[in-house]
Length: 109
Length: 115
Image 1 (cartoon, each protein chain N blue to C red):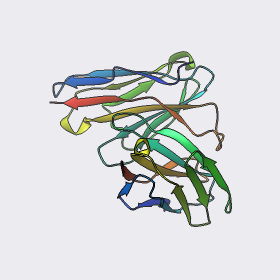
Image 2 (image 1 turned 45 degrees about the horizontal axis):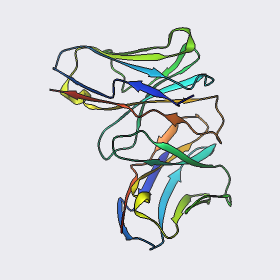
Image 3 (image 1 turned 90 degrees about the vertical axis):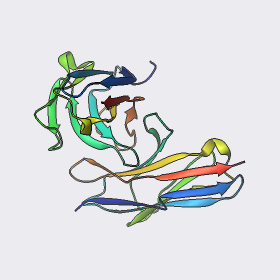
């Protein structure tokens, strides 16, 4: 069964304290792994797609990496405006997006 | 193009009433998706359209739910005889086609509260 598990559920960091969020997945035929950011009361905002092991993508303070079993979202020197819920989703052979429950990140000034 | 637009942003309704939500996707996107999200959960797939054709419906979508996309442009999601369990954020997303590197563009959602 296709499944996505994100950890931790919640993370509190001090401004400038780097850390990583994890997304573990099982899927039949990975077509793509997606990272989204969601602010309270808003829809998810697309960040990255990764589709092969070893791939990395960067955007400002965020860097996403992918292995055959998991993806990491590394946050370098975070700022309070990085506070949000980060969602991971995978698409497999059936082309459906399977979503994780997200990691709620709070960055304190 | 200002992205995916959803209306209304908030809807409060009494149990048993019917509600209708509207989604205007990005104009060149031929795929449109409806999701439902409750607090602390990831989005749950409801249905999707390619142009005007509704290609898939989730088993979560009971007979009280219906979606349309006339002419392959905007879409509506109607919930008949609302129940308290229908209270959630209803999200619409669009994509140009199945291109894994594009992701989906989501709207800001319609928050439904059934009292």
